[in-house]
Length: 112
Image (cartoon, rainbow, N blue to C red; front, side, top):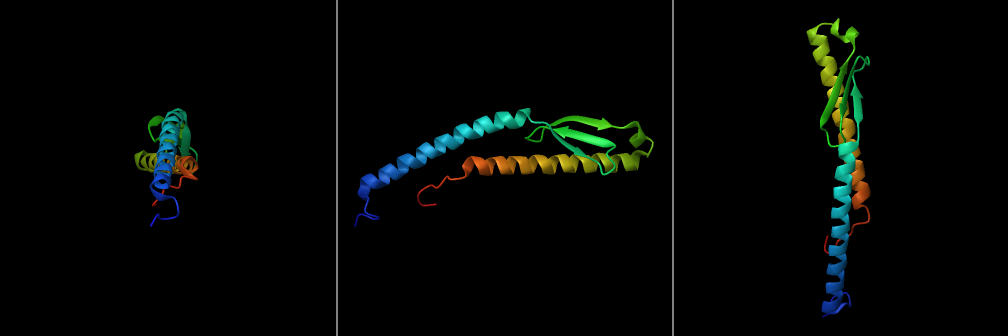
């Protein structure tokens, strides 16, 4: 029984291809990590008075608070900052997911 007609040599070739693809994905992941670190993704409160900037891998970079937001009081300001942070986090998560899907599309390892 040779299995799929390749025999042991066919399996070795499949395994070598899988390793090659895995190395390509690893290199791509390293490049993607560097790219994500340079990205600036913005989230903002519903009224636009608070903006949060994070990198593509969710490292906080900056928070911008409008003077008008300060006049709304501590509780409203807290809610605005939280909303902006959640939006920035969601956008960065989606960016990471989308870019990883692009990176791994077409990756078809034997036995998977």
